[in-house]
Amino acid sequence: MKTNTSSTAPIGVFDSGVGGLTVAREIMRQLPQENIVYFGDTARVPYGSKSRDNIIRFSRQIIRFLETKEVKAIVIACNTASALALETVKEETDIPVIGVIVPGARSAVQATKNGIIGVAGTEATIRSETYTKVIKEMKPDAVVIGKPCPLFVPLVEEGFAKHRITEEVIEIYLSDMRQTRIDTMILGCTHYPLLRSKIMTFFGDKVHIVNPAYETAMDVKKILRESGKENTSGKAASYEFYVSDAAEKFTHFANTILSYDVAATKLVNIEEY
Amino acid sequence: MKTNTSSTAPIGVFDSGVGGLTVAREIMRQLPQENIVYFGDTARVPYGSKSRDNIIRFSRQIIRFLETKEVKAIVIACNTASALALETVKEETDIPVIGVIVPGARSAVQATKNGIIGVAGTEATIRSETYTKVIKEMKPDAVVIGKPCPLFVPLVEEGFAKHRITEEVIEIYLSDMRQTRIDTMILGCTHYPLLRSKIMTFFGDKVHIVNPAYETAMDVKKILRESGKENTSGKAASYEFYVSDAAEKFTHFANTILSYDVAATKLVNIEEY
Image 1 (cartoon, rainbow over the protein chains, first blue to last red):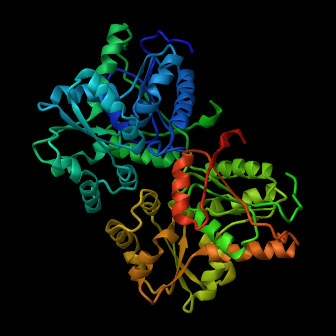
Image 2: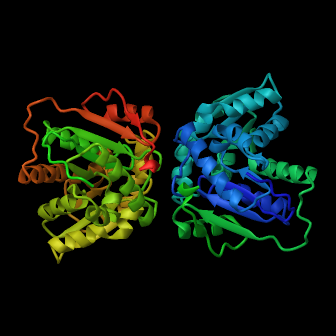
Image 3: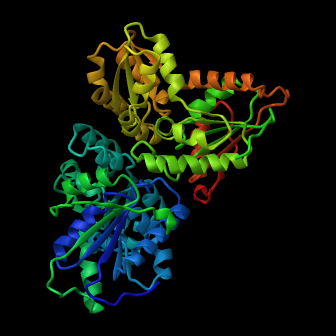
């Protein structure tokens, strides 16, 4: 557990699979000078239906892997891992670890007018009530309405993001929430921004949709600035991608999400870490 | 790798998760005197989108675990693991290992009149073309039409088996196949029998639907009989359930599938095997 003090060191970003690329994309956009090492745990995806103990174990292994890449900060791009593992794992390393829940909650608290906030997420994220807890710490009188949407991840992963069937599933999961008075809704899973336009259409103008990725990238920027670790080398940023399985499929998916052209993804046996 | 010669030893059955319970159910029905140790790899489910290397590694770990339970035979209830790992792992143990592909293929070959057989399965199962290869060994002039249906597993796991949305997904995946002249169709994933009635309604009377579980249980019976290992103790059979994650959720699901009442499921750290 060594801290790398070099400002040119990469930022480590991890997720259960491809979803975290929506967060990596935002970091690339807002911090174009920063190098990134991305890890997607495609051998064990999805996390959203798994237990806290396993999510913590998986996160520890990935952090140990990212430590071998001498990262200067770690972003847990996965909402489920942020909700269930962040508190535990950040105590175990000297490297700053940033999750997506606090930035997402802050963004929602800033946006809401009536204090009624919806959260769509995986079963594990919603059941943990981490968003509720964090939002209420920021705004004690807020009302938080959570809804697990477990089919959203497979719909995105299997290429149904633009399909009519996805509109029906959105309706099944979120109709109850539309009946409430929420004026802000957090996309509490990194896959969900890929359904953003359909979810926006479903809710209409009255609901502000929050993608925590934007605020997360802002937090990363702030932390690097405050610790004097912004990369000011002036060199073009380099991006590396690692997965625990099916590297080719990941590369293909990454190229549909990122503007950066992913040439190759490397395979890692994450259980060895 | 020891062979257990006791006829009262249990049969080991494993799957990526809950789907293999449809096979365990059939073994319980046809071999009511046999003890069963079931393992569901719920920490790493689903297998269908993962690589051959990882499926083999997962299967090896599970077989090592089942060996500690001194099983007398191992049933790979998962089509994906049967398609990708069976050939490799059966050479590595003295315990007889039975997959679901050969029994399923045999059943289809017996049922077909025109020799045109459909197979619905996971991406990995269909891409492996194992069903095609096995069917053609039995009936060289057969025509096999495979179709990956990756959303079927999450639909079942998330409780949508009886939902109208599932009918639409069946239509999306299988409409092309209905346009062909198949007269027999294999449910080439252990989750799919839970969608059987909807798939039968979709195809109508003209297509015979094969659930490999039935023929697999017959094969297990035959192997035990031939090796003199049928349990004739006359004692009531005992069933044990192990998973790599989320034991409670598994128990709940198991109780909706099995007529036997599952009291408790034990957690195993499968990566230690």
